[in-house]
Structures are given as C-alpha cells and as structure tokens.
Image 1 (cartoon, rainbow, N blue to C red):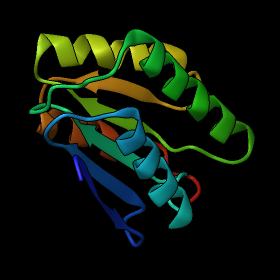
Image 2 (cartoon, one colour; image 1 turned 45 degrees about the vertical axis):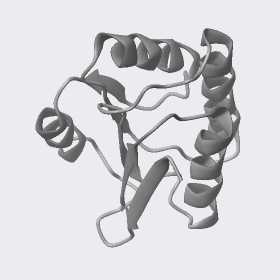
Image 3 (cartoon, one colour; image 1 turned 90 degrees about the vertical axis):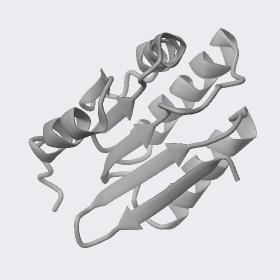
Image 4 (cartoon, rainbow, N blue to C red; image 1 turned 45 degrees about the horizontal axis):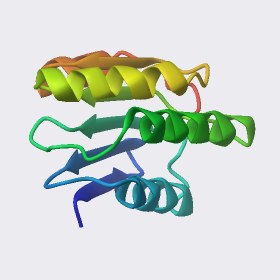
Length: 126
C-alpha cells in the first residue's frame, strides 16, 4: 500500500506518508479510511517528500474537487502537505488549488515546519 496513515483520536491528528508510486486509487483508499474512522475533521499531515506521484494534473484536480464534496457533507480539518521535491511541490499546488474547502491548507518543504504550523491551527471541534 503506497499511502500509509495513522490516526490519533486523542490528538485529533492524521499523519499520512506516501511511498512508492501513488495512484488515484491509493488516495481514494486514504480518503475512505479516514472517513470510516471518523477523522475527516481532524488536522492532517500528508507527506509526499519521498514518492514519485503518478497523477496527472486532471487527476489532482479531481481529487481536490472530491475534498470540496467532503466539505459540503461535513467538516474537513486543516491540512499540511509536505513536499520536498520541486515536482511534488508543484503537484501539491495543483491539488490545493482545486481543494477549496474553506479550511487551512499549506504546503511545506520540511516536516517539522509543517507540524509546527498544524499545531497552531484552531481545532475548535476538539
């Protein structure tokens, strides 16, 4: 499984790491897993620092649009995307541009900076 994630219900935090080549189906499995566990409203870190993404701009846009649909049916929490490579950063920007869900979303180059920002986000639902 190219996308591995853990959910901390006490911390209201999801940490996902993408390894190997990631497909749309892998991201959809992640969405389904987080939703099933009742964690869509939690703060999230999604690290794509060490993975080649096999997603086209259209696929990234479609995934972003799916987040908009999730937001219409419930809360989506703040998201910090960690993308160390230039390619990963550009793909994260495409996704972020389509995932306009009225929630904080930022893209970072380093995990510790992303975590610090995410820890500062308002988690009023806690």
